[in-house]
Amino acid sequence: SAVISQKPSRDICQRGTSLTIQCQVDSQVTMMFWYRQQPGQSLTLIATANQGSEATYESGFVIDKFPISRPNLTFSTLTVSNMSPEDSSIYLCSGARPGQPRVEAFFGQGTRLTVV
Amino acid sequence: AQKVTQAQTEISVVEKEDVTLDCVYETRDTTYYLFWYKQPPSGELVFLIRRNSFDEQNEISGRYSWNFQKSTSSFNFTITASQVVDSAVYFCALSLNDYKLSFGAGTTVTVRA
Image 1 (tube, rainbow over the protein chains, first blue to last red):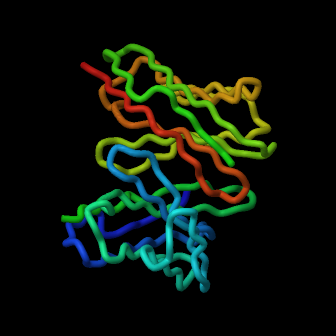
Image 2: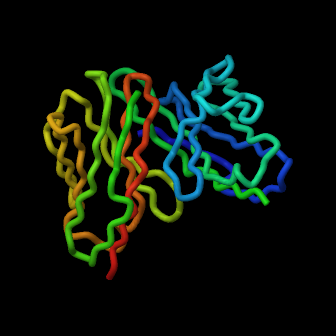
């Protein structure tokens, strides 16, 4: 199994500010993803974090709002920019490794964000 | 596009009862992977099982068992002799070879003592 560490675990932020969430994975993982879970909802994929290049965003998510970096294989950040109360969610980092054996999509413990 | 349906929003049982969570999926791909995750109140997502589309063999792990039926596009999950610690939200998910997960809406299981 892969080890994924995410921080902060929670934060309360003022509207209009930005928060950067960090995700560190162990060397087994080559693919990294960011998901959002709004209160009482399921998880939705925000983007695939690509090493050394721009992230690939899913429909409904844009780089200006959720800039993502992945400077190396095992580290990625997600920034939630110009926050509003609607951004209050749990943000989760996930990692996987294609091939054999397939290392599955494990998740970090999540960042519980509250915007006031 | 892929779709995962968990029709049961909430299930409440008394301890030691069995509980079955339904999951129905849609995909046009012949190669896909199905998952179950547990999300306790603390919020982390705990991986429970993965099944690939070529392996319809059912699986049992302790009190957990999974029934995969391609004929009905279902991947159901049963907790036998439920315990209070099983109280959580359970998500069924599907991915293709791109490793992106499509989640169902989740089923909240409450086990009462």
